[in-house]
Image 1 (cartoon, rainbow, N blue to C red):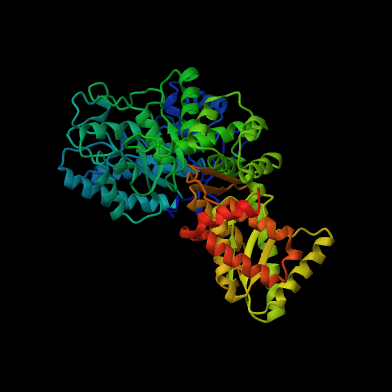
Image 2 (tube, one colour):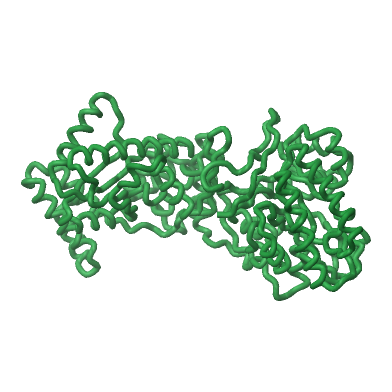
Length: 607
């Protein structure tokens, strides 16, 4: 996992979008936050702050505003500064030039640190020289390596920006170009610099305008060559004109809604450690800035279907359709917001299993279809019950993860009980069902299976916790104990549940604080979820998709289980029923006999 450094920003009462730095477990972050460069406004820094305050976004302070920032400070959250590339040259070998460059760069880093800003965008070279590219690259590694030591002391992370190609005719005067190749216009330059400078305070900022001009200049380059770079935590969004004949300026501004840019943003929003999308927009902020913010946030929001940046094809249209319908169902209840991502994912997954893709697409097109109408069309009782349960008893992301904390305590309590009764841990502990699938809700039980040699523990376990439940104590851990020779039954249960998590003998679950929560967060990451804990203790979760492979749970198995539970008094001893269930499970799971067994089931037990 890439560490993105420490980014502290001033807090305020403006109602700003979350711009807090990475907090909590493993430095996992949600989808990137949209901020605004002060370059968006042609006036002074105060006007830029007013615009940012009105739009509810944090800012990147441009070099032209740094002196003003030093005098006034930042009344709104500021997360980065852009260093003045015309006042330094890191590719130079001239001692006097370097002395002047270090002095200016240190001054600007001091301004950032003094304002509580911990990121600074820097161009690899600054002002270009006419030395050969190989020599300039060596100088950058040496000179930037010295500067980074100062940045580390000031707790400032330098964001190395990719450059536009120098080969286009008509290069603007501001570039002062004396070479046809600029270090950083190809991704291997940035990769080389990062490989030679080992510092947690050196990351990458991708400028989308420069990136697109490089793609147009070099046919061998692909978008993934840039988005696949390590340590990309920041992005300048300015939606360059992809036609090189029109894109000769450093920043050709257009609303960021073209398919190519949407594809790039989708790729970046799923990248580990990606933090900020800085909007470098045109001057007519009254119209362009709000529209661009909305476009970007829509592109990186959890409900947007993922794009593949090179082909610009949706990876899984069904996932986007299901999330769209799930969002509609939650919107009826005022819950389609960033606090109910897990609920939305679960409902979307139920919808995928409840409807063929064509039917779900039709539902998605019909905007007047409400939850009652949708539920009435669900033929499977299993998925209808799940949809009804979650829609009638909704939960937030924080509810789910706090529920996992509670289950962790209950699981530990039961494992301690087993130790007290037997003097040793179980042979094996498994968690099945919704937890293992990453679909646990705040009202879900934890389905666990333990393998024990002592069968008497099961009865004692049931009795002990049944007594506690009589006193009003919740018991969310549903624990089934099996003998080692009944492992085939456990395999059957695992296949029925669709997923299983092996906890070994349960010692780690018993001894490790927050064991179950960490396990569940790992599962969520595997299921395309990113998780962050805010300084206020609130969980923020985003998702880039859902699993759309339909589950093949055998309805006949469910009918048999219900039948055995309802008629257990007439079926003899518990072991006898368990033996029947084991044999039945083996038959139903066997491809050669499953269909025949299902046909017999239909005759014996009408649904």
